[in-house]
Length: 336
Image (tube, rainbow, N blue to C red; front, side, top):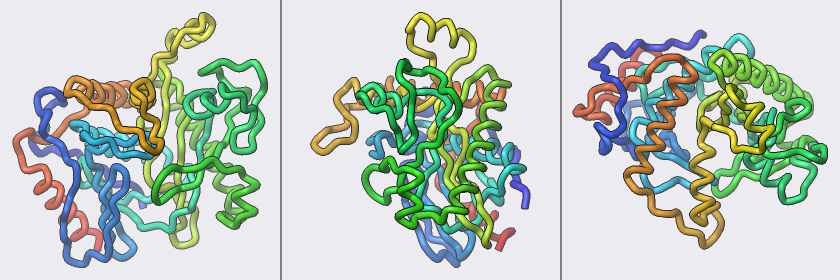
């Protein structure tokens, strides 16, 4: 079934983070008829209905596998809308879980049996891989890296560095060999996820290049639905990917300058600079209002760069949770 994207004609207004700073969704507590389960992830509240699920993208933000204490205005709407567009742009490569997007904060789709790993595809040496490399390691998840690389350098070819999917705490690096040896994913199926992940990354690079961006690295999650490999969660969003601006990239790299990024990496760097990497005993630094609004503005910037459109939010003064609940009920009525 093709993804159904709604136009959201109801009272939309241009996004302006400072104008509705307090309008955020931290948690939802709905009770639906026919509901069979509930799960609260790092950023999504998920309601189950047999083999269907409704995922609410809240304004929570996480880094280093820790949910930060202050929600980011409009983040959920931007993230959910961008994820829906990106999934639709890749549905010719692999089926995905989405059936309907009835609200900017909501995606309704197929409940899949998730594989217990995440497929991280890297085309550039950045983020966690760079931190490992800078510490002296020349292998990441069993993949060898050449000497002489600098931060943000393009790799000789894209590599896959999987991680475990921890229900609590940190995801951990794991190699292809360990995944198969531990029986986490059968070898033939894992080979299929590798091939699909590389195709998705190639598509992501093409889409990014068309918008003047470079997709540096990203992650994909997969599940099984009715025996078929299915892309779940999201793809090519700022929460799951890192982007560089293509203009001036080579010059900045040649001169050893920092690259201009569009991703959540700036949040991680801010946390590191303020003494937090999610380790035991560390405390999340205070998030001032100006900083929270800056994060919101960065999400808007990536949406505009990636899509060429300005993100819209539904009315500032409305009951956001009431709107979300109503739209979920309407979608389920049509699908069930």
